[in-house]
Length: 151
Image (cartoon, rainbow, N blue to C red):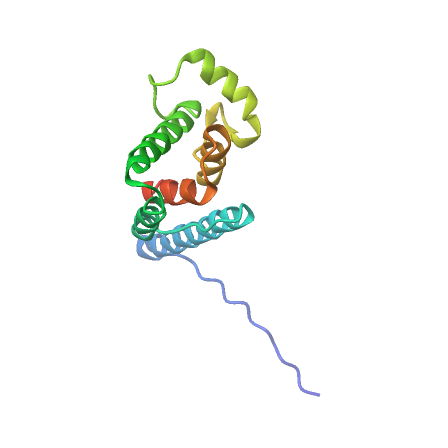
């Protein structure tokens, strides 16, 4: 009977180059996983996540479905809705009255993720907020948010 020995080879990162390569691989693996998770969240809402350039093109296509006079109003509504979300999570300040922000933080609490006392930017929740709060089509909100390239 022949015995097969298994040898476990452990790689010791003896120089900083190996360690940097490992950290770089881990970083890109985490980035890929995060993108997959974002795409999944968008799909669960019935819309698609898009890279910035594609989203900009898609947003132009979707806006073209409306009369020219309405397109500028739609752009204003998208800008306002997006800025409102950014103020709710504390990224920007000054556009929305503090009382309104506080009330919206309560109303839309389920769309806000907080870590260590800070709200996190979540693209899919931004889309949901814009659509729900401002009564905008989800696909247009998704294209708008993706065109901003937040992730």
